[in-house]
Image (cartoon, rainbow, N blue to C red; front, side, top):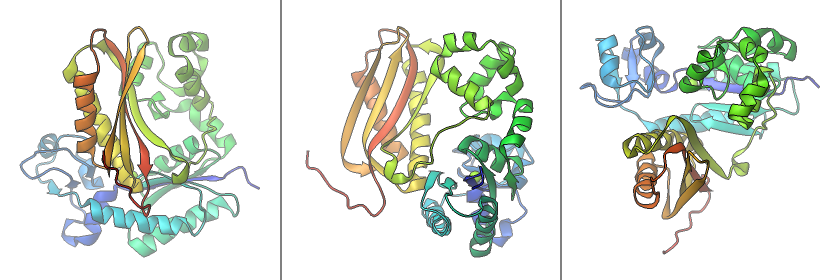
Length: 349
Ligand SMILES: [Mg+2]
């Protein structure tokens, strides 16, 4: 049995690729899905032609139009993307039942039999032949490295990283490439002189652990190429959450609301990818004295809507969370998950 057993599949510029496939007049043109021609809203996906102008997802459409005056804005057709996502999953299921969808266009697969390199290639080919769309595929010995691999030769990439290769590749990488290192963490690490994975590996780990605890430990492990997280199929996922430690502790309701909005959008997307709905929404607030509180609401009807998740989490924050002390961490979690094809139980409360 080979050490390689994880495949990460990531569709290339998924939403725009679908629209360019269905509307030949948009092919080879800078296209954005999301927002409208008046420049309202946010870019969901940018085609590779648009990316050449610096247009990125999550950017405001106004900014996208400034960077690329000829850009074409297309509406989001989530129902269509979900249908295609299901077809992609039916291809995966020919090879394994251990599939962890992480968003509408991305999934991890765990293989117990067969040659993962051959299977990765077949999946990529089959997606293209059946759906006319390209995917980037990474094959490796754990989830983190497989995801790193699929990102290395995007678009239309196919990358295998063995354990030995990972040891060579990792140290050179910018620290941003490590899972969970966002803009803020990157800035913090840069400020203490850490720019690459190697910088972190050479750094005083005790110092990092003292300041960050478990999170530092996980970061160090990832930098060593160690990731024991298992591929979690839908049936095993009980909840999904998004949270962040704030750059600066705050009591500012507007700032906190903005985080809740961001998390709600992220959760809505993650649920859409797996066609999951939730019934319970929980917000978590940790104060600067490390005491934390949670507030929950269970809805009479399940939802997958970012807007509804945001409304409820905002209401809980405003009405049920005292802001007497500055907040250092905020998060939203959805649970009581309802999977597709599961009968929906309506409760009358
Ligand atoms: Mg993608």
